Image (cartoon, rainbow, N blue to C red; front, side, top):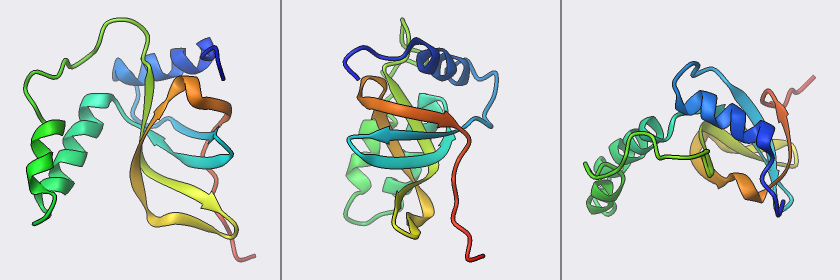
Length: 122
């Protein structure tokens, strides 16, 4: 999208204000379907930092995500969606199977729906 969807930004702003942490969303970005739960940016950054800190090779990058200079809530409408336990839907599977952490620019979302999708064998 060249013009970010105001409704989608309102949803992101509500998540950022921590009124809810249970918002599941599915978005289409450059043809990829990504589904998962939204998190406030500071919570997302903290979780990414924890995962990186546990890695021998990637540990030094944890500092970038947990830097104290990072504002808790940036001014203005949110520019990004922060997904956790998210999967890229590809064929009959979700990648990664256990869910991952994704940061997606609101302006890049071409379609979206409330809720997350999962596959069933039945």
